[in-house]
Amino acid sequence: MMLRGIYAIVVLDMKRFWLNRARLFAGLAQPLLYLFVLGAGIGASMGGRMGGGNYQPFIFPGVLGLSQLFTATFAAITIVFDRQIGFFKAVLVSPVPRPAIAIGKIAAGALQAFLQGVVVLPFAWIAQVPFTVGSTIALLGAMALASITFSALGVAVAARFTSTTVFPIVSNAVLLPMYFLSGAMFPLDMAPPWMKVAVFFDPVAYAVDLMRGALLGRFYFNPWLSLGALAVIITLLTWVAVRIFNRGEDDSSLGATNFNWRR
Amino acid sequence: MGLPCAPRPLCWRAVTETAPAPAVSAASQAPAIEVRGLVKRYGEVEALRGIDLTVEAGERFALLGPNGAGKTTLFSILATLRAPTEGGARVLGRDVVAERDAVRREMGIVFQEPAIEQQLSGRDNLLLMGLLYGLTTPAARRRADEILGQLGLADSAGRPAKTLSGGQRRKLELARALVTDPRILFLDEATLGLDVEGRRGFWGHVRGLAAAGRTVFFTTHYMEEAEVADRIALIDAGRIVALDTPRALKSRLGGGVIRLQTEDDTQARAWLTERGLAPEPGTAELMLLHADPAAVLPELLRHLPVKVRRAEVHEPSLEDVFLKLTGRKLGADAPAEKAGGWRGGKGGRGRP
Ligand SMILES: Nc1ncnc2c1ncn2[C@@H]1O[C@H](COP(=O)(O)OP(=O)(O)OP(=O)(O)O)[C@@H](O)[C@H]1O
Ligand SMILES: [Mg+2]
Image (cartoon, rainbow over all chains, first blue to last red; front, side):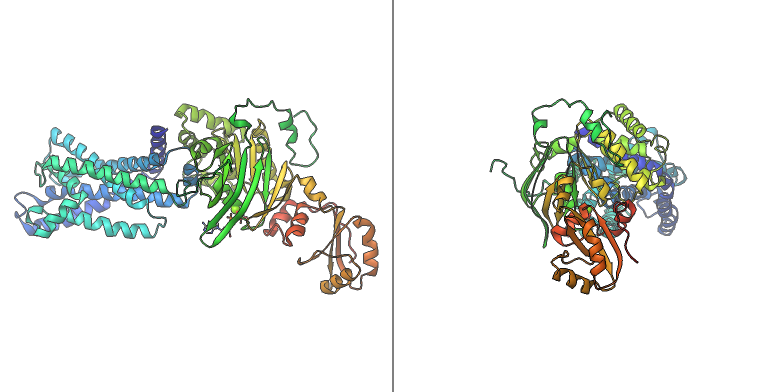
């Protein structure tokens, strides 16, 4: 039931995603803006000071991360939307275990984020990112991990909200700082000391660093640390999401008195 | 459909009575629904104030009540969407809190509000429901097509649900509830917004599909729908005020009902009260219960000191029963009555 349930939720979300597949291309605008406008501008003004080499290849993994992060968050918003349409009620009265709903949502969001990343990927060529078959495969693996992390993050946050107006505000307040802190746009070695501490608590930092390392061979964290940290973060966020889904708004599992039928 | 079906449009009894008894296991011999001392509070609001109810397996049971009476709340609790504050409920012998997964597997529900994903096609909606209930993709697909065929939706099921007509959408809701072959069906104002034809068709389908001993528990604002129920519970302000067969409920009033519209209802009321005819208190219009209304009406019209605009005599309706019991109108949704036209027919010819 659990696996079937996860599968059903993923099918639901992917079907809806496919209907809105134009969004994949609309979703290109922001990362390309970062890459070719912001990146080109900053890169040119910094000259070669970015730890040697080009700025655009440096931020490319960061831009990938950005597009994945936003796609995952957007996918998570559907949870809030779903609560407002009745269909979700039909899901809630089905025998699918609540954890399957949470995990299915995370899986679907991760899949969408990954696909969005794949669409951004070809622009690496224009940004003059050096890559080989090996580094591409490593990058795809890192992207998958990053997608799951971002999706779990989005779902854990979105599961709490019932209002579509509040969630984007909150997610911006949470996600943007995480993103800026992550070293997606600048090398962390030059960051001020407080940032170097804070970055250890930033899931996005590990994800971006892993992607950058996979692509450019340049790691800030030890890759094993990143892998371990992401594994822990994903587990933790999934657990949080499952717990919230288990509660529901007024779900029967919530502190209901056990009625004594023999009375 | 061996037995003759009464001329009324929504008779479905014949079907169930000839249907073979479903195979019964121990659990299915339990009442379909048992509700004991059920109380539900939303903060300050006490939506249910102690409901006791037993619905037998295979019964068609209607819940009638004005807006805000607590019908949807009761449904949500039975459907495991909300938890009782006090008391308990069992569906097919399973506690809705302790064994909610078992309850969920056995029931289908049509919510008061739409519960189909509008972007997806009807077929996809049903397919997903099937998957959610643990069917394999081919099985879910087969089942979806079967139900769509039965409901006459096969041709429109490929389009996004939002492009369907209101009636088709409501039918799709029913299809969604039925796709998992539930033993008990909850319908919360399932025909809301349908015209008479649409409702007739809808209930026709419910009748056909629910024939195999399924329990159907429903709410409605349309009287002619309630009349098809085996039993009806009238609910008001979170309490059940009466529970009986439609016929027994109506016979509680005895005789018939006279309704009058006059130039001066206050004066007429006073005059009637003086004569011991006791119009029902608290209602906007003048309503009298009488053992033989047709005989007393001519007398009334002759002697009443105020001019009568309109007079009506009819058999008691469920609406009248409700009015008598609570002093309030049942169909707070006025259009509901008009659309059904259930009050027509016997209406007396009044003097202008
Ligand atoms: N989530 C909620 N929070 C607070 N009060 C609620 C909530 N849901 C329902 N109520 C209140 O509980 C009472 C019963 O509502 P319910 O929806 O059960 O009525 P109903 O009989 O279904 O009415 P209708 O015929 O309009 O559908 C109402 O007073 C309503 O305002
Ligand atoms: Mg309701």
